[in-house]
Length: 554
Image (cartoon, rainbow, N blue to C red; front, top):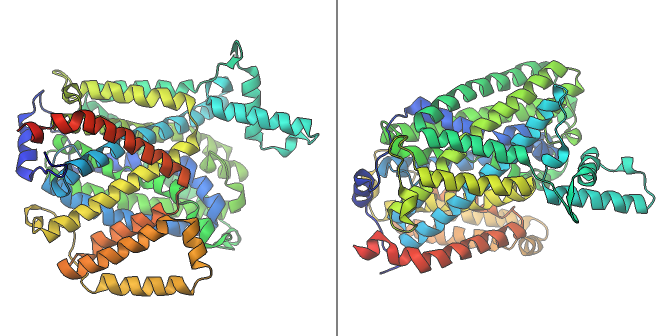
């Protein structure tokens, strides 16, 4: 009855093979998996959040993409080793079950549910923005009060009223604020309640959920087609935009310093999450132990190169100060009077973001299914549809949980919250590899993270890094402003000691530390919400999962 009871690799594979409610169809190859990864990574991030990151950090944000990609590579290697060891659908949840025990598996599974759900909401909201923009390009006006959230509209209306009462001209406010205020004023009312909802976001979620429900083959085909179209458009952006780059726009390269660059961490990291969603399809792979590791690394390499090139083109075509818009790719081509290209991008963004939503919506039901199969959630979540061979009930629940909030919540809140859950999952996966190495269990892995002995290196790097930090001004004030830095340095010290004792591999350690450092750049309010989410999860676990777990009843 221990909270740290673990499943062996043999147990997990056996449970997946038995499949109480049916089996999934093995149909995915390395090309399909790579396509899913590209679909997830190149979605809302490259078409929307990349602009905000460039606005805050300038051209130097291209380096932040490289740094974040490196952090993801270390994590991807760890994911790849686990995927080759435990080729089932649970992703980091299953890996934590093997390495750390049930309570950690539950925590990471619950965090993954938040990650995928919130990611889906961000993507759905971004899709709605581009969809209505595309319609306006064809001369079709979609009512704004049916394409935004209540909170954003009401706050904009209040700001406009305050500005008007102060006697300040309204044209001093951003155009988007005035548009939202008009939407609030024009919305039909039920008593004092203004009827405002983001209907396109909810509608596209329902449609994608229906596709995912029907089958993995149909989802694979749709994803592959959408990814080809997406890559063609990105190639067009880079190829055409390169001729309009003015090197003068790259100076200064980091106008707001390191702080400005790092302020885009949440946006940039959000652009990269998604490669881990590949591992949720492990049971539908023809050869998961070979293809999953390859696909993760392939899609990360491809997407990193594309992100860096796009950032350099964007910041080279216009001054970085002009990029604080929701559709930066279309905007820069409008600025250089290439309206046709801007129109193509707007239409393609709808396609690109649809493919990202498809992959996220595919991943979450498989997390529910795996947790249910272990007895930690209601048994019905593990139900496999007899005809479509998909986790049917879990897919419907996922669609409902994403569609409803996406109609009523705003974008920025979700972007930061997504990153918290993702960093948490990534750290545990990297830490899991260290555990497998220390216990001598890595021999079961068909793919292994390249081993670099960190016995002395981890501690030496700690001394050098902390010494360098001490030379900076106001180190203590900086750490007081970001309390997680105490956790970061403390964790590094623990890893240095344990690394000396157990000859830890350097790469997973770097994965833990880079993800933890990036976490320190996120806002405290998001952490509070994340902790609240985990608290709800623990209540469910102790009231149901702890007693119903297969390990408890075995």
